[in-house]
Image (cartoon, rainbow, N blue to C red; front, side):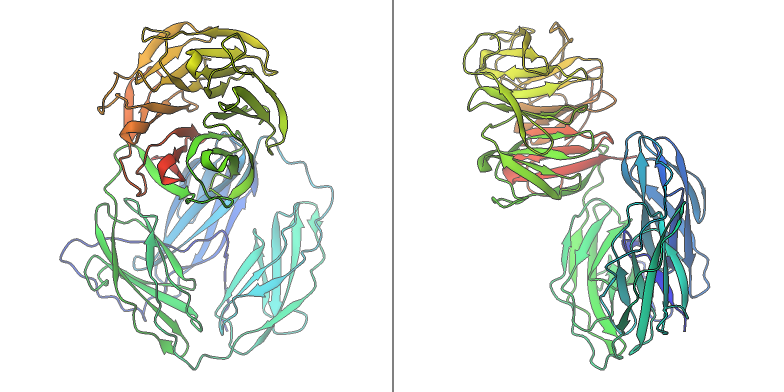
Length: 595
């Protein structure tokens, strides 16, 4: 018996399609070709310091003996020295966990996998001892031929060895090495008891094996599964889409058939053991047809009813939609009129959820982390050096300071027009030295404070001349300390030096043309000093370079991916990803630059 081991997480089954031209067909025999299998993905070293490199090796196998091609990709970092199954990845300039993807294809069908590498600001200390033995071994998703094994990860472990067998010692079928704390077994024998144990490894040595666990595969199926239902396409872009369907009881795998023909056949048929597909490599502005069947060892169901979807037109903005989160509501993770948004140096996303009277925190993928009460309407920023959160409370004309977990540190200010007082403060920003800049909206000025809230200076007055304001609402600071202020009433962005002296205007006034604005609100600046503006009334994002010249734009009125309904807030993370508070759609959208 031949056992295949697939690295289940963080693997995603990603389809790569070669789209055949209009009018051509491809005869697909789903019984004669097997997709290549990724046996393992390894990185050496398993973690790197900022700017250093790791070599990644993909061990793949094709059951039909076909040659395998490898396609590598990464959202961040630099890929080089690609030689088929091996690639050199150089880490980006920010610490974090990064994913490198590989797609293996035999020219007819494909599989894909990914590996995560930890990037640190300093080298990890050498372990002083071997790791503890893994615990909580759990086997799930058992069928007649497959099973999934997971266990608790050990903090100091760099990899694990899995030993398994049909003997009680869990050893007569072999051992396998893996970097993550899970395994997917495939091609097992039905109605058979298996025994499994796992040990953890680091540079100091190996742990003892864990306690042995056992499981029994199911008997060969005798009932053909029913047809999949509730096929849903989501997250459609110009080249990708996600397909899900209801899981079918008794199904051990699914076949997805895709085409640009109405029979959903002329591109190919692809197999997966889970009830979803991530399509990639699609053509922009193209209609695709999809159908799915379920199968087990007893046979195959009929295909589900065909559904169709159309990919978006190709992006010309230089930015692609990545993800979105939030629906209207008051539960954790839901939003009701989100206005302002900020990103910390470590990637946490802070959102003012106005009509739920709170601030919510998410990770960079939109997973909820935390929330706390807040009564302000707009204005939040994070001090990148301390991770302290600053928010303007225009209801009480003051500034609140919180730690990263939402615990109050201090507040300052009250209603008035004297130095240190406010009248509806909205925008707020912190420079690299910890100075705090506040858009004091209806005192028509910018006020500057030290990190403790002591007043330092102010500039501005009511008017439309250079250095004057009608309604300053957004504020951001570039790497040189220059200050950018959005004036929603005058439809302009003004740039000042760190002392408050006027430098120039960005854009060309009110309108819908490139570089024009209709009620500009949020403003953000990336590490290259490019300026991003939430153009509220035009339902779009505009980007300018550090000299103030228009670069690009994206968005239109709507609720689709990449569309907006009066966006208020905007933020940019250290990798150049752009986060938008899509206010009246009650959601956050994330975009990444095209590389």
